Image 1 (cartoon, rainbow, N blue to C red):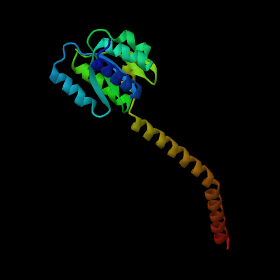
Image 2 (tube, rainbow, N blue to C red; image 1 turned 45 degrees about the horizontal axis):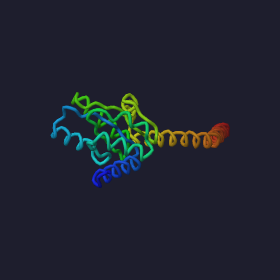
Image 3 (tube, one colour; image 1 turned 30 degrees about the horizontal axis):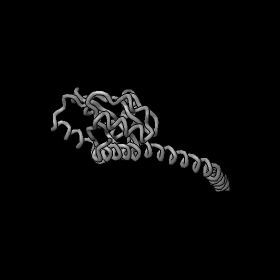
Length: 173
């Protein structure tokens, strides 16, 4: 029979899995408590980082409907539950893993799709949402400016031709 504290832990992990925009699984073997605190600080408010028991996490992943995660729960595992932008969390994890070789990114899940460690690295290479939106806005503004210029060009040319004709008539008179 399951103990109430374990049932509650499984329910909490399953809820976090369902509510997260992305999940990144890592192996933290060899990291000190101080390094884990530093990692949590580097993730900021965009993600929470929790060390989990593999058996409980496997049960929670099955309950949440994420069976693809089950096989990745081997060895000392911690989960980054991403509530904000997945790109920001992936960048923070990759940067920390470059500085601390002990942190190994195993894979994860985003929008119901399984991610490999390589996928998480590719995600970290993307620019943030704000930068991509700014680039899209700039491209749309440029397109609107070009359209406005195209609409005003014939009127401007007509005005120049009329002015040139006036100057020519004034010179002949």
